[in-house]
Image 1 (tube, one colour):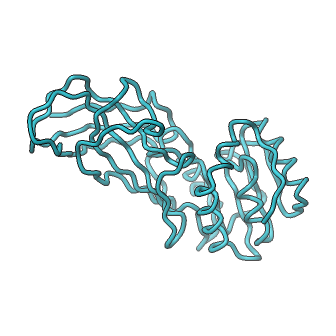
Image 2: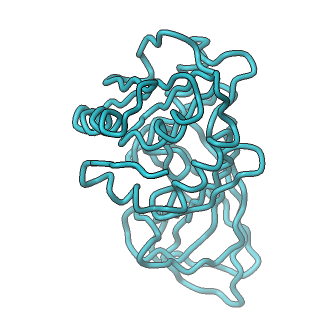
Image 3: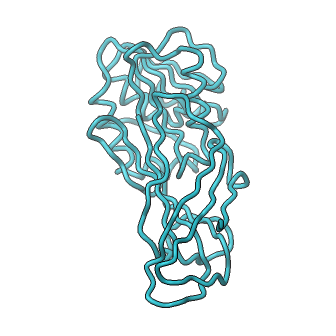
Length: 266
């Protein structure tokens, strides 16, 4: 499939993340049928709406940002899609003309903290907009936590630098988008440092999120899909071998970094 695309500068990196696009394309092609009505929530450039539009009866692509909306609308027109309607609006509130057979929603970020995936999908369920037996892409996310040596004293993505891990990676959260999920969450996570002697370190927490798009299609981190997130916890903290560290972590899904509270517990 060849498409002509114009995008805002900040969307260019998303289009260049071929792994991210490829796995969404595979999931959409595996899920969508010719008579389906699709919602593409947070349509961005419209690329996922156009992938679905080749396969189904109707796509409603909704975008909150007015600049991105104009790009998406032009992309749909230039590429000749007659069955895609691009809407400027808030997916949490917009009154769709009909219910969906499939919902595509790539409003994801690590641990679902800074993007509104959870509140938007919650709103869809509360309003009964997904048909019985309908599908959601992605279906689930799985988030893990791991102790690291933090390289900075503020929250950062572990991309161009890599923070040294000092514990195993532990699953602490599973989010199923077929259910209504809490928007504010709190966890106690037990982690055991894999060190051989007492050390004084800048302790941080690395969060990773793995995305199940549909049955059999799982994505790890890519540059523009859930890159590892480092939360510094305590500078110059004394760590002992074989001593469990309890991390108390809370945040608002669909909030921002300011909603994060992360500390060492008793």
